[in-house]
Image (cartoon, rainbow, N blue to C red; front, side, top):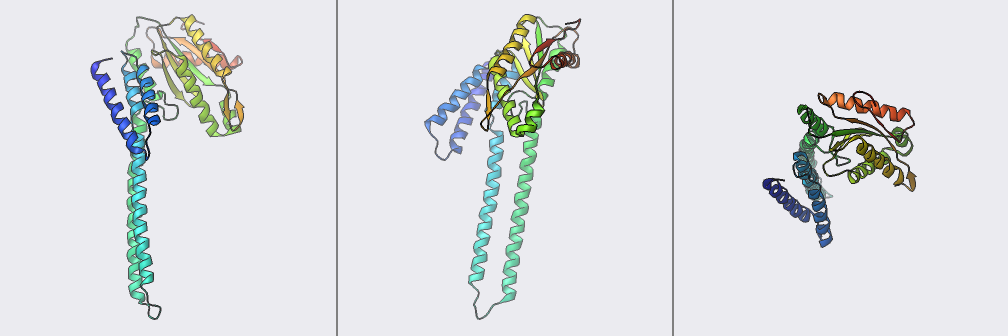
Length: 307
């Protein structure tokens, strides 16, 4: 990794640590230790010659979503404070009325004023919330990380494969895996979408633990994941895929007291000269289709000239 990249990461980590401390009402040593441990793990996972990996680390340190959330809370707080002030004016107006004589025109004028202020505050709060929602949408569109699983998203995959295929020829073998969670729709229908989200997070963690630093894992879409394995041959590719299947089937995920058994089907292929992102993904998809049709929870491989 270049010196400038390292300095940039450390600077960002330091700033985020200060922001995290400032955001806590009662910060403690354990919170700081946890943050530093996470930061060390993030930096250790950076491939020295990998720009995407450095970008991933920066995004991991990014505090943009929390900042927007804080702005939203501040907006609501300001509006709430203003409503409280208006409520006090309302009470004072009522208390100022003499039981023997009620000046209805004056009271109506006061209440109209209060109503006008309240309407202005509501409109202002809605405007701020609308602007913050736009910022969140822009962050999601420009981010290379999947918001749920915190791994690379489809946007990052498209960019990576475009860059890879532009090279036309690689100095080493590269394999790709397309993975699909078995019977995911049935699990969603039975346990609900929250259970489905927990499974996606669970799978992403397993994949990150299994892969080497130089490998990349992406959320392809829905319950599908895409993995790029660098500098390995076909036999090693199958071993890694087999290890993933074994880890998933042997680790239990509990949701509301029930054990959810998770398996995946995998399709594998190898990058060949002249590949485009479409041809590479298409072969992996064909191999995945075979795994699904042959009973699931297995790996099949599709090469350009056969199996």
